[in-house]
Every structure is written in C-alpha cells, then in structure tokens.
Amino acid sequence: MYSWYWGFIIINGLLAVSLLKLVNSMSLLKDMNPLLRGLTVGASFLAIIRAKFTSFELNGKTVPFGFELLYEAAKGFVYKRINRIAKRARREETRTLADSNALIALGGDAKLSIDQDALSTPDEKKADKAWLIQVLQEGATAGIGKDFDQRATIADFILSGKRGP
Figure 1 (cartoon, rainbow, N blue to C red):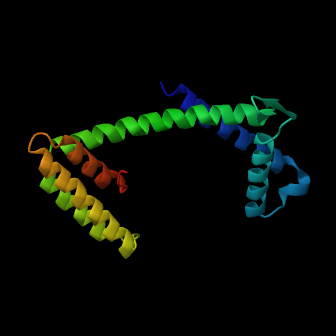
Figure 2 (cartoon, one colour; figure 1 turned 30 degrees about the horizontal axis):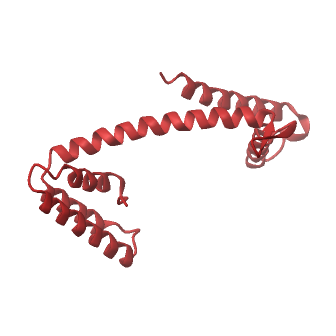
Figure 3 (tube, one colour; figure 1 turned 135 degrees about the horizontal axis):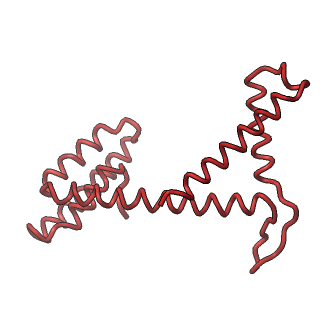
C-alpha cells in the first residue's frame, strides 16, 4: 500500500548517503568543515536530481528528459498519494467531530479557536467570525438534524484552521 511512498524515501536516502560517502572519500573535501560538507552534499543531490539531458516539446509544453523527469514523476505520484491519505483522514476526523457535536457547541469551539489564534490579524479574526456567524445562521435555518453541512464546515475549520469558500 505504501510501497511507492517508502520507495521514494529510500531512494532519496540512498542517494544522499552515497553522495556523503563520495564527498567523505575525496581527500580535497575530507578536511572541510562539516557544515560546508553538508551543503556540498545537498547541492550535489539537487544537481543530480535536476540533471536533464535535453528538453523536448510535448503538447505545447517543454518537457525535460533525464533524471529530473523521473524524479518529478515519482515525486508527483508520491505527493498525490500522501494527499489522498491525508484527505481521507481529515474527512473521517471531520465527520466524527461533526457527528458528535451540536452546531452551537462547534460554533463555540470555532470562536474559541479564532480568538486564540495568535497568528491571525484582527482583520482576519473579524472576517473569520463573520464567516462563522453566517454558517451558524445557515445551520439554524436548515433546522436540527438537517444542519450536517454546517456542522461539518465548522468541524473542518476547527481541525484545519481554514474556512471554506
């Protein structure tokens, strides 16, 4: 199930370890400051990953051909898989929170979350509270038992810190 994910991590790790061994075996770089040696390995890793032999046009897009193409394809696949897993977990967590709380309780938790957010500006807090009031009013209009969308919207806000559209 997670074989692509772990394969991507292992290949990246093996490449980094190989580069470190190569740098450590070079007499010129052996006595280098460890921080500078780490930067050398990091820069070498990026140079190898970004290596391309040529580029060609495909459907109006310039496509690199080389390690970069393979790396970007693998990275895109892994990122999509991770995103799918994270979305599924967030969806289940949101549904659980929405199912186990009344709209007014979720509204109180969301307001508390807004008030306690030290990174939000006063204008952002004001906009978030206005949004919250709108969602609560929509839930009240929908009626008890028919307000799942509003409960889920507020539950998602509590879990993610981001409000919906």
